[in-house]
Every structure is written in C-alpha cells, then in structure tokens.
View 1: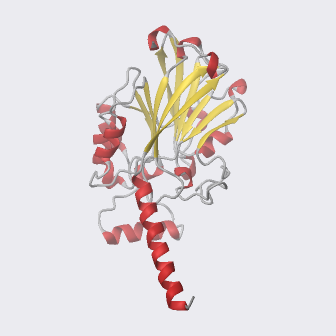
View 2: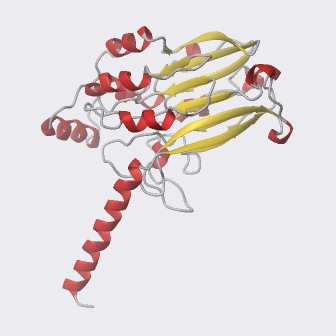
Length: 306
C-alpha cells in the first residue's frame, strides 16, 4: 500500500475512533454494585445509595437534562455526591439546578472537588488559558465556592467540607464524613473522618485519601465513596487506565470496588468528562449501591426498606 492510501486509511480510522470516543462519552450507564460489608448494622441491610460524581456540568447546562432523565426513576434511600460537579465555576448554576432536584428519604450529602473551585471559563480564550495552565502545571487558581455551597444548602443538601455529621437510618446510627479533594491537597482527614461509634462512611473526591486511611478496626470508615479518576477516561481493554490523575491509585483501582484494610472503597467513573469530550472503553456512570451484611446471598431486607 502506498503512502497516500495509508494516510487516507489512517485518517478514516482516526476519525472513526474519535467519533466513537465522543459517542461513548455521552453513553451513560447505571452501574449497580451489591456491597457485602461484614460489620454492617442490621438496620442498614438493603440500604440503597445513589452515588453521583464528576458530573462536570458545563455553563450552558447541556447535560443536565440527560442526568435528570437517568436518575429520575431510580429507587434509592440516600444520595452521596463526591465532587467535581462543574468543569469551572461558570457551571455552578447548571450544577445547582441538577443537584437540587435530587430527593431521598435519608437526605442528600455532598463534598467538593477542585473543579468546583476553578475560575469561570466561558470563552475559547479562557478555555485555552485554563488548559494551558494545567498542561504546564502552573500554580492552580481557585475561587471561593461559597455561593455555590449556599445554593445547595438552601435546597437541603448537606455539604461536608472536611467535617462529618450523624444521622439515623433504619434505627441505626450512621456517621457520614466528607473530605476535601486530596488531589489538590484540600483533604483534612483528621476532621473529616467520623469519630468512633455507629456505621462510618466517608465521601471524598480523590481515592488517594482512602489509601491513606486506617481501616475500620483501627478507627477508620467501613465504606469510602469517591471519584476523580473518571476510570481513566481512556482505558486499554484488559489492561486498565494509563492516566489516573492520582499519586496512589494503580490502574486496577481507577474504577469499581476494591477492599483495603477492611474498608470497601467505591471509585466512580463519573458522569462527565474533563478537558476533552472523549472516553474509550470507559463509559460514564451513575452508581447505585446496595449494602448487605456479609454474604450478599444471605442478606435480608429490614422492615423499613421492604
């Protein structure tokens, strides 16, 4: 095959791959996990958690309708959101429009990611400058997300910024913490990890935080929910994620469920994309988690969940 034909075939294949990767970035799926947790209190058996992460809503709110269509008919009892709701603060209004429509019997809890602090980007010039700064590893610039937090909290969402709360679920004490973004050194685990007592959960944007925690037998949480990696966004089938934007997470931990020191850690692939609207072998997701005691086959549903 001569060089012009080879170049032509390369262009066709490249265009086809780009078109597929763009389509996959919008092909969101609901991923269900049943988590067998040995120390789960009886009243939490069967609890269903909606896990939302990395929505990266743009300023024009283009993906808000798709997000709401996906979650509207799902059945869950608690909503946990783990940050990066926007690409930059220009998307705060769109993100608040989406998140404040979430309702759950036991509430909606959220922590923030570094993108939720990013200066607004609305023009091509601002987009180029924003991504050039990231590529050159320039010092990151942040804005105060308090207006966004106020909007969420006015709708009843509990925003946890390196702190924790107690709630009662099915007659059981649950202590739920929220840490800042560990990838941007915003996590203060000493104040975010709940005090001993009850069933302990932690929401944190980057999974690196989970890998720095002690397990439940040493005072750490039993369950950690996080995101940040986008599952790699571009994955090599059968091998994993070459890029994870993480110092500690290996290519097999970039998405899904893994155990560490008695903890269950759930890493979401996220709903949106960052920087480029492409995914490959790594579809975006909304998580639906069901907690069970020990062996999932032996689990029972408590009366309040039946």
